[in-house]
Length: 585
Image (cartoon, rainbow, N blue to C red; front, top):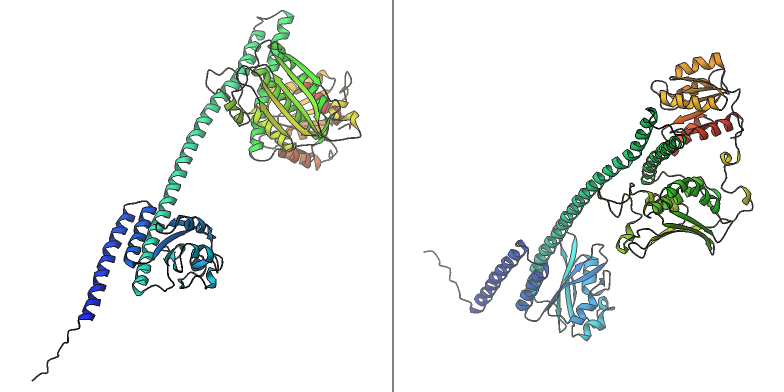
């Protein structure tokens, strides 16, 4: 007969098992509820409040809090603590991470649970003991909250108003809270990262659309600005060619118009190249002591005809003469040209432009004021922005590419100076102020002058000299030939380097002017072949449409005696050739 096992009923054990089973069901139900909140994208604060409220209710005597770790991992920020005093929450917001920084700061530092059953006597609470005790908080257990990558993202803490360790059930609650909070915080961080990416993408798309719009507007303006002087050049030249203009004063006016518009065309190209250099941070200054009054006079000489065409009066007030700065003569002249050109452009007929040169301590001030249309206050911050104009529509009052002021702004910065724009509003004129540090010099007589300023060729400066010109552009050859012959030289012109080498051997010129960018054998190769021949001492001037500083330095380093940029201006060509050929460069 088999012995039957007899089971003895234990009521107390059955009650404990039933209690744990009931709590597990409650925990499971609540977890599912919170996970659903996370999955449906509820706000993080609501989720954390829900977790804390449930934990406090289940524990019976715990006060819970969540602190969120900053991205750099140095501080903890308030996340949720609905039952803790507001003053306490404010004070722990920004809690430093580290040893002995309370239960939470230490838990992050160690990466593990920290239990403090007696805040009053535990050294971990040395820095925050008084704060906690003043609010009746006597014990605290904190655990680090981890994300799925095991990185700490915050802390979950159980506070008690009496000295104690967490109960067995509290430990179970802490584990559940730690897990749920980690999922919720990670989801929030992922959402924030995704939203930021979407925001960045949206911003990038808007920026790209704006850039495309700016590009389209700029190309329209560029087409307009390039075609406008071409219209004048072609129109007047055709009238002259057909003999429709015969009176000398009208012929002179037509030629003057052609020259002015050709220079304007060249200036537009130079401005575009300068913008390119500025963007590439390749703008190089050749600094020397400069007399500002001299530079202002040079600029006025170059722009006076434009002002006179609109019957604009330009007044010059030199309140502080003999002011010297350390700068690039050409670039400073460019600054004042752009500012004066801008003033003329936006000043109506019969208006007045005043240029004032004065001293302010160790700085020079150049103030250009006009009586023109002025600038709206809200537009002042944008006047030095590249490609910007107050009116970029086809109905705009003034021409231009919107780059002159931005170039002036950058050039002044490169001179360690400042440039400011002021206006009281529309129809109230505008004032531009350039501020430059002064340079004291003991030799003011030649400030701002270079060799081309000081040396003037005689009446027939090139008489008896043989000059060979090499360029694959027939029009350039013809222009240079006519100009050089007009000043007495014997000129021969060829279109290839091979022809030049042959002619040098039999003709023995005093000087060669060579284009750099020719098909086949270029100017550099021509120079090398001459240097390796019996004519290695022959002087050669580089001629090119590539006007970058790098190209110029490369040409001079290769052995060219001088560097001329296209378009060719006859007077400048003669002056430079005279200096090179007479050893005065």
